[in-house]
Image 1: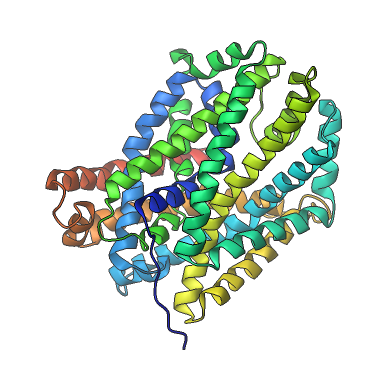
Image 2: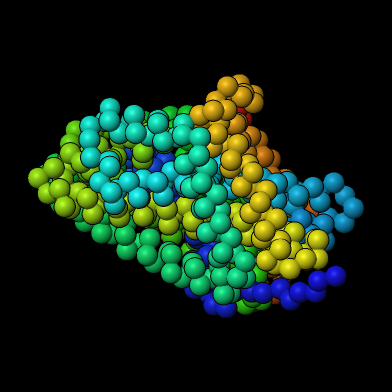
Length: 453
């Protein structure tokens, strides 16, 4: 039997950057700016901020409570608090969800690496038709995307296998500031383009006429998915928190960092897009088809600048993807390490192999396995739909109900108030939100994802 000593984060900054990094991902770069721009700009941002307060922060704290009080991997954490009751399934669901997400997310992250190399080689200079053909041919290639996806998981493995303090924390302290600096450089370049002011106005000018029932649900969903609720990531990272870490304060800081980066991404994308008269689309087409053409056109008079901007942009995407894949990998690594009583490195290898297999099938589903359908979708899209529309909302909903109604009040109160160091009123407010507000919000997101609301 392999004995082990659980690690923990070495500093408050490490906690914030690592946990914020788990939330910051590709969705912050393209989905948030698009949703804000198409749903009333500043009006959407204000409603999104309200949703973060109502759902995001209480939901994060609920997972923090489970993780820190148990100081175990996600499955064992829920087992400790749930005993032999059915509630224990929540932890296992989180581990499974994270591994499926890592499998298909690595494919998209691999595309980012390919585009980074293509930018270096100058292969992305051309009109939209050329770039679209480039993307389609690459995605359908039987081996290139597979190699990039597996390589990305391998790079993630190298970080996670080194442990919490020497691997995850050190990487986060390097990756997150680098990501922020790249964003600032790209924003400066984008906002100096002719006509860039129209893009800024598009993002920040409130249009309350677009505040509709559907927009409210979209903002709620963005708050839910942006903060990684339901993946067991927050629970796993919280198991490494020290006793003096303030859960509510940490959740607020993480939410602020995540939202700030999403808004900055909008400042990077929209000015450049509007300077050449392009209205960005949502989804992979934005970052792999539309934006390469935007960079090419916007900096046509300064080709060297356009060349550098393209490289920096795909480096930014790769870094954002890596901060997320590290957290996804850690969930499974901690689980196998502790439950199978094997070394941390061996546990990491189990996750790497399993998720690489998922990645291979997801990647091939864009080409040679495109005829293989699951729920009427290709394998990659089916994995995305299964996790986003069912597994994540169910996991988050069960966690809120579990913490709000089942976990002993003494345990929750001690964790939220840091053993009495903070006012008891904070605990009462949290309990109200996690018992009543969060379940209603998550149920609304769930039903909206399924097309019911």
